[in-house]
Amino acid sequence: MTTVLAPSAATGESDDDAPRPVTDEEWTPEARLWLARSVLGEVGWRRPEEYSAVAWVYATRARSSKRYTFTQMVRTYSAAVKNRTNQRNPWLYELGPNMMRPPSWPEGPRWEGLHAVAWGEVLVWANEWAAGKRPNPCPGANHFGGLVDHYRAVAKRWTRVKCTSKMRNRFYNSLILRPKGKGGTWRWRRNRSG
Image (cartoon, rainbow, N blue to C red):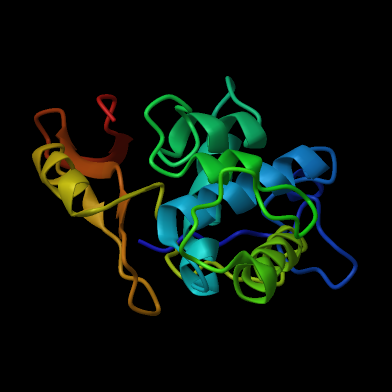
């Protein structure tokens, strides 16, 4: 299944008519920072293609939700940023809009030059994504997770989404095909358990 985003005011189109995943009202400095922290925590350093796939899942889920804004969806859905207690990377919460070393950055990895530049790249990527310059590499996905999440996806009969490049995470669509009525008419219905 492929999802095509048609240009509309609801998606906050830019002048060049590229589909924008979030509206200008939703794309705040706070949204940028939480998205950047989340994709870094979920995917790791220097994987912009997978950052885009994860971000498009957040945008898809936020658009279909009447309950969450984009920023709330990122902070609710992302395991990397939703729970600050028992966090294995406390420095993730300390990453700011500049390239300053987080106070809890570990002793071993070098921040200055190496990771500071990489964090800057994540922030630049976030702005490019919000401007519609980073296409969705996993069209149709509305869930993602690692190998541990695969068994839940199989049990719920989610469909694995084919991405345009190799990803660390697995991407799924939770819409499943179920029979409707005696006549065997089929229609797409959202899996309510996921």
